[in-house]
Length: 167
Image (cartoon, rainbow, N blue to C red; front, top):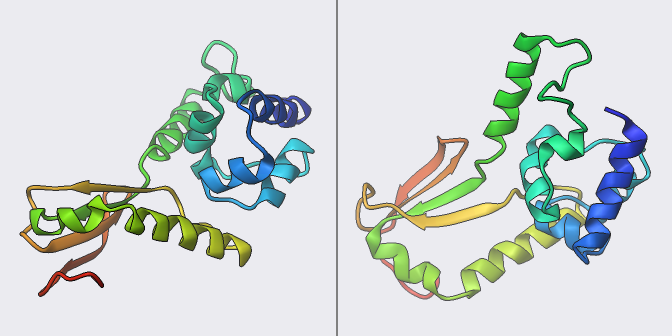
């Protein structure tokens, strides 16, 4: 992969989608300065960001990484290539908030989604990144249970006793 081509590809793709550096940064959970450094070939995005970066820019990872015939290693090292593809596939799973049926109405209004977006913005100003958050109901959970997962690992699991406007 040619680092010079990589930065140029991100720049062209971002411009083709009509996004500013700040808009791209907010959509994938990084700072605008990080996007600028990528485009100027001063740094590379974290591997965990590739899936979201490709989705937002509407490009394939193969194109962005400049792979040839499926090979992304200098010498065709199948073991290293398999590990890289496995890690890229793991990037497809964002942070998830799973809710039981009794909590579905809590997420129907847009204030919760707006709250998450605002937290992402505030954290980015401090240099912290909040990944993409997927919210979905899960019939396997108890009525007022919610669970936060990342990469299919449970980070937090809790039952809420009462549901009100502050839940």
